Length: 308
Image (cartoon, rainbow, N blue to C red):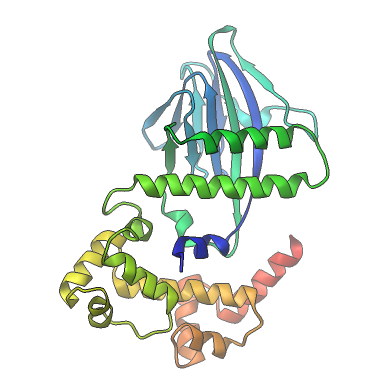
């Protein structure tokens, strides 16, 4: 099992490009908090990205930044310039076009802004990256430029199937961004995603994802991956960021949520599939984890689907 592929396959992605800018110095754009990730691709020039409670991140030509939790932020060439709210820009309906903004001085910067929208069921993989993910160009970054250029051309004119095409391109872009981030992780970074590369904890995570219904114990799982109970427990907690027991419960609750949304199986059957002997015990833990009973969770998701 490719665990990352399994998680991503269960998450419905959307998103699109919002603006294609040509910016003359000085300029300063303000983006409000949004319920989705925002990305900026600086194809020419330089800029600084600044979160309200975070440090400033200088950006150079070719840099790609993702504000993963949609926090309010500024992106500018000169912070002394009054911020202009991004959502106040007007453009013709149905096409992206190029928006000119800023002063008349050099340097001229070009930048693409867009979003990653994610609908339920949510995968824990999406909460793992830092608040801002900054990818700098490397020798093998042609994939980024190719995808973004295709998104620009697809957004430029309204045509049949445009929404589907942009959604698919956004999904590929997100997966490639995630791959690049995973590749850059050092031991102890990135939660379970980073821990997948560990020769002991990676196989343990694989077993938990493949068989969440098993009554895994520290002793049994440690023995399967070649570590004693204490060593396995300490290593798992250090690399994943939580104990094996807590991770197992979270994995079971994620699997249960997926089954409730994607199937018509009874609650007792789902409880059994994720490792619980009784529906009552399962329901109590599910409510604690998701804030809703299994039945209510399923009804809410069905209602959301009907409105979308």
